[in-house]
Image (cartoon, rainbow, N blue to C red; front, side, top):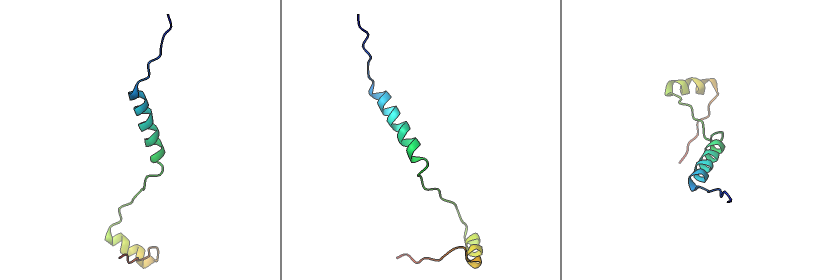
Length: 54
């Protein structure tokens, strides 16, 4: 009698989500909170540029 392997959609879904999470993690935007006082210090030091977005 032959043993037949059974494919489960849940294994495919779990593998797909794991691969998607691993690939997206390095490319996720990393933001840093900058308070206004710190922004003014950096602005005076010339390390930040003011942009006017409409």
